[in-house]
Length: 194
View 1 (cartoon, helix red, strand yellow):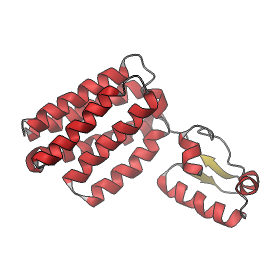
View 2 (cartoon, rainbow, N blue to C red; view 1 turned 180 degrees about the vertical axis):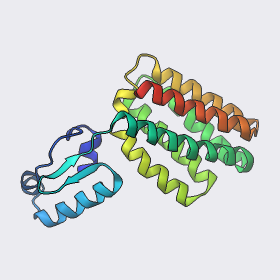
View 3 (cartoon, helix red, strand yellow; view 1 turned 90 degrees about the vertical axis):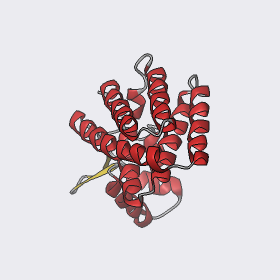
């Protein structure tokens, strides 16, 4: 529940998390709430400050650059693997997700959700659980800034075109192009988010 509130901006980056108020609101003691905050801190969404409590993590420009850099490395590697190893059925599944993404351009929230599904499915097909876990954690941090990245005029359409280029490389089974197109996708995403 707290994670969703953070992603929906009900708890803004940098804001103090009022444990007493939230405990009362959820009808629980502070102990399970503190355990949840520890999990969120491990995910990078919450920052614990000694004798000051918990705060929603603020993502600096440097943080964002570092997260995008790592996502670019991990996900471009996955795209290369998918180009080489995916079955025809798996590629059709990615194409279906891409088509759904194209149909959702006018609905920002749906576009966000489908975009994440596309990326996570590509990672699943590539088949490295350690990479998947790292990407899932990094994407949680990226979500703290996500709304800013797609507010740039035309960014959703640019993102969709970048996905189309990745899909074309995957369809050609061109691992080098798939890696390059995914890296470009993240470079452009960072530029829009900064």
